[in-house]
Amino acid sequence: MDEVTPGLVPRSPMFSDRFLRSISSPVPMAPWYRTVPFSQDPKELFMPEKGVRPVPDSVKEMLLAPPSTVASSEGAAKSKLVEVLCHIDRMYVKVSKKLFSTTDAFKDLKLGKCPVNEGTAEHYYLLYLLKTDCGFERESTEDHLFISIVLHYKPTTPVIRELPFDVALQCKYPRHFHSFNPGISIELRRGTVYKPLRSKNAYVITPQDASGNEIVGDKMFILGQPMYFEVKQTDSTSTDQRLYINKCFMTAFQDPYSDPKYTVIDNQGCMIDSMVTRQSAFLKGPLNIQKFSVSAFIFKDTAVSSSSVQSQLYLHCEFSMGDPTPTSSLKACNYHRVTKKWRELYGNDSVCACCESACLPLSKASGNMVSSPSWKVRFGAKDGNPVFELQPRSNNWGAFSLEDSSDHSDFLSYWD
View 1 (cartoon, helix red, strand yellow):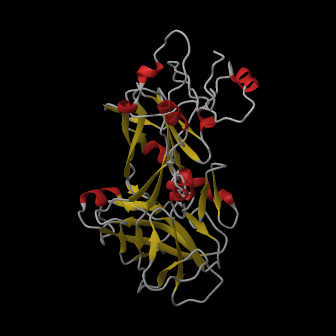
View 2 (tube, one colour):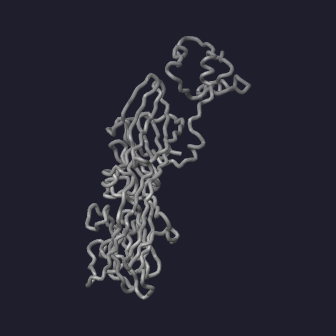
View 3 (spheres, rainbow, N blue to C red):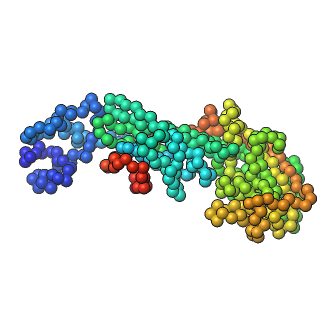
């Protein structure tokens, strides 16, 4: 063992001290491993035998060759919305919550047939052994083993605030050495919603931006993002009374009695859509003007059945004027998911107690129903599917346990 070929030193701790003491000049260190095609694997040179011999030049050239770079600087700068880690016996998938505007989106997110099984404040995780019946598909070539599966997001709710998507994921393993090629990043280009809203009735609904300025020209909103609206009477400047929205719902057709239908505000001023997404809420403003926001969506059935690249919606709302002090019949209540309580926009939260049951309507019919022009909903791609840009990244991971265990308690330690 003393006749070691200068120019190549093993990295094993069993020998490093001895070699470094015997060689005074700096020498390159051999890597922990090198992945090569099966056709270029000189396995006969690594067969056990008696005695010692110099390392062949071809082996030294192979081991000391600079590693190839997979990840690009452009890819590193992109937001990592979906990432994958490929371990020897399992696949870990991390999905950013930035892709979704609803808190229950994880219920419709699946890795093949398997649901989300972990989560943090910023990400959903799908952590599964490769032997799990999720739908993993295997393909073998001379040099590699490929494990493939599809990440699905298919909303089952009656309305959609993010377009459904399928992302094909694949792990690539060299057949003659266990190395990993994990990770992809996606960029989702979501569609836009155009909403021209003009009413010839006594009330007018005006689309606004987040700063409260009226949107002129095309009323464009992004699917899943908040749309801001202002409601006021066109022929009144009085500030003695307060404007209330009793109910508000949307349909796919101009007829307010048609189906499908999705209710946003109901029960005499309860923003029931705020129980689904925090982007839907009543907003403060002058008492004779009511501002509110709604998270943009499309009807699922309409999007699936239509071959057109655009859809349309209609907004129908009922308004009333009343005293500034709210009652159970005239109010503006938002649901706070943190406290799990209803709160009135200007205080007196007790009037919101009936939002969990049934609020008494006004003693006399004083509501005014207003139907808006249609919303034009357009998708980002010609075929109505979201657009993804995939950018691979690669890391070299150390040894990973081969234990047959479904315990993924250490999954957070593997991500950048």
